Image (cartoon, rainbow over all chains, first blue to last red; front, side, top):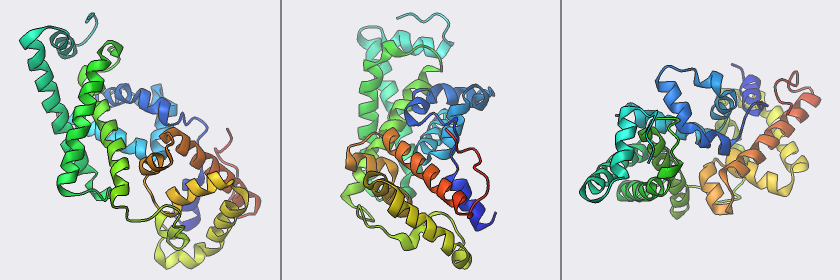
Length: 71
Length: 211
């Protein structure tokens, strides 16, 4: 990836992105779907778009995923 | 508390937490201990990205577990069985850790609000130092758009998050704004900057950015 592509990737926004509030409201459902082999991104494409773009929500997703995996 | 349709473990949690006396107390102790374990693991996982260290980090974990416990008990009736009970409960503690680390950030911040360290933008964007010169013109255009086309509110938030690298949750605490509000400002700023870069020939097609 060249420098322009890197910048472009950062600047691109996804119209499906639901934002932090909606993503966090269903995070537990999204995580359970992810760990049980369900297609979370297909059922919640706006959440998937958001988690890919929002660092803090992506961190929360990873944290919850790891918490569930630690059981 | 209705438990029909729930998985066995979730139903057991709800039954025990909804009971009286010793059974309920035992369930609460067990849940709290689990939330503390999750919180401690989570603060350690995030340790590299926060200025909070040592015993203070453990304090954050314990406070997060305590507050999450209160929230879980207060909202038990809101649990709809759309996920396992534990996943639902763990969400509270993960979000508490996130929020509390944001608040603690300002006790020993590595950078001040409004520092405006534009010279660090290439690193923030992951641009190879050997190629900074190649990116200089387009980054200068990014700065021009930020300074000329964003509102003062948008500019302050963009500079804090993207240029100075202040964690979004920390900025939300400092400015008394919701995480989603700040994300939306950054989202709109990214879109505005990209449109300007496309219009000026620095980037190609409009891509996915319409909304």
